[in-house]
Length: 331
Image (cartoon, rainbow, N blue to C red):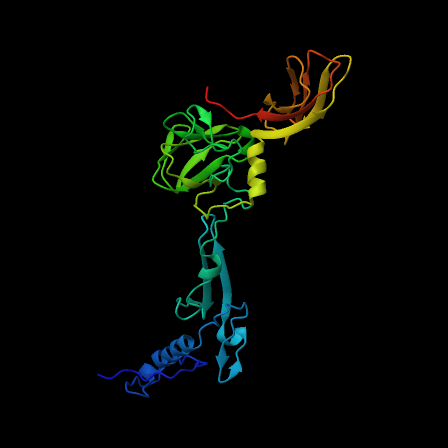
């Protein structure tokens, strides 16, 4: 038994066997004419696959001349991208789908393979200080003090490290993905979530992301059903996000009222998520007489801060440290 001899050409016509034809086999027999024409076309398609750049024209050449869409019946370029981020490119030739090898084998995988359409891009990570770079308190470690915040955003209770995310940050209800690097395990509002796993969250609801050990970094909670690369934000932006909850700033007073002994000024903050508690520490004072009385009238944007000497007729200069705390604490 022998095989058909294929020729790499786009045979223009497929012969129809008529009722009066003698159905003969062999190399040039009518019985093999249709199969030979289709085999020629298949070989031609294999040798003239779509160009590597994936151009929209998808040019095919026949006898060194560009064939028109009608000549090769390149009928519909179907792009189907689903919400899970997968994408396929289907090309139809002569009413039959060509396989990956015949037409652009990679099927745009380089461009679309990692696309996550359901993910919000730009500040997609709802966790602040997920890479543990911000340390306004100057803590020696994330676990330096118990029942306290050490590194910004992470509350340590002696066992777990928790970040409370305010309700305003959750704009959308739906599926969220939690991911990190490290051996720690995680829960969101008490529900265990595997690394790279999903959880359904509700808009306008406060959530607590809790890790059972300090062996985690690049923590990310993002909207969507697919884990994406960790969002590395510029440090100045990460600090500002942290200062919405906690901030240390400084102010200075030069002289005071001779009649009352009061010195006051307005200390501005990064806008807090709520009215913060404010504490003042005097770092430096000159010509000190008597006892200091500290006052503050905080708002979300700042506070009137001041000190008073019991001997009002003597001048004094003050340099103060102002701490504004709007962190969320466990109840």
